[in-house]
Amino acid sequence: MRGTAGSLFVMAVTPSLDPELTAVVEHARRRARDGDELRPPRPGPYASRLPPEAREIVLAWLRDGGYDEAVARVVADDPELATQ
Amino acid sequence: VAVVIDDRLLLDVLAGATRPIIDEEFARGGVYTTSCWYYRLGRAVNAGVGTGSLSARLAALGPDARDRVLWSLRELPDEIGVLTSRTVVPVMVALRVRRPLNMLNAEALAVALLVGASVMVTVAAPLLESGATDLGVSCRLIG
Image (cartoon, rainbow over all chains, first blue to last red; front, side):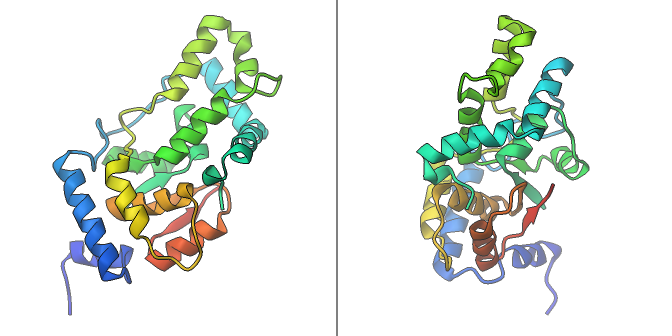
């Protein structure tokens, strides 16, 4: 049986959800849609607001392990925020 | 398909390190993160006062510029979607997966289900990937 592109997409994302979860997702999705929450507040291209010199510092912190060290300290205090 | 990005990718975005796949999703209005990843990023940005901390590294810019940068990293841009706990928590509670998930991973999968997105992470996350498989959610590890 052939479906619409939309139905094929949903099947691809959720091939085996149990009915209870499917119902919860659909209900939450409707609420979010009604509250205009499903889309970002201002959808569209994004450009960094940081000045170039700050971008370099932040990216160096990310690339050389400084960020991971900071996250490790956070996660040590709060395992619910750990990558599993 | 929209994407739910982890905190390292979020920091990449905020610092202007673009990736074509994420830029394409921005153009479609399909970039999301989670409250946990957003919170973890904020905690990491604020963490520590030693020489390795971000605050110490930004000191060279001067106190006013440093504070502006830190403030910018704490504010989630409007181009990035984040769903409220009122919407996400009921889905997190209803998730049925073989291996138990912590809050960070449960939220990522719940948001992905809600917005029909792939989860995009930069660090291997076996339990997240296992849960994603159980739920039919695409989970992509990118460098």
